[in-house]
Length: 220
Image 1: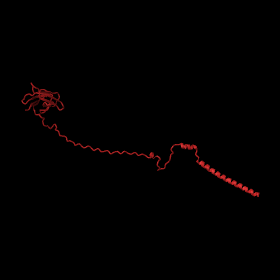
Image 2: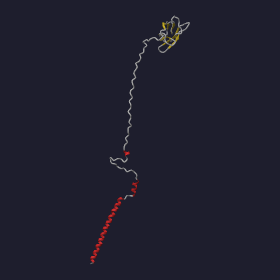
Image 3: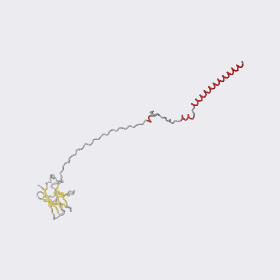
Image 4: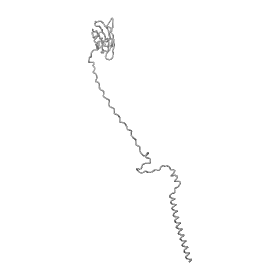
């Protein structure tokens, strides 16, 4: 009877110990799972502060085709060309009609004598080599009397010219041009008081060794 009681007590102790061991194993397993979870979620304080205080932008790789976060910076601006109005062609100037020159007479074609050019005519035109250096003569009226104060002009083709008046009494009608030592062709004419010719022009081929005498008579 005593042996059965000891055996029952031994089994009870053994059961109690088995239950305690199971409880210990369960508790130990739960503790390890908590430690692992705490280890995975723990972050060092230094690293957290650094990450929070760093304001530098984080480079992010965007795949091709993904729009940029700042489209206004990445989209290129294409300049727009200002249209230039087409230039208006300037019409060519109208041609000016040419005017045919009016034909003028040459020196070889004598024109009509000027008004009053026949008021005097040449009575004498000859060379006198008894003395030289003069071109002169006499001017007469229609009655053959010496005519004073007649206007005579002597000139050449190079712009030289001289003027004389015929003398009054006592040598009425006489005139003389004192010439130099150079020969040449000269022209002699009688003018009215307005400077218009009233006689034909007489050509004088002057020779310094001789004198040329030209006498005039007033026409009727």
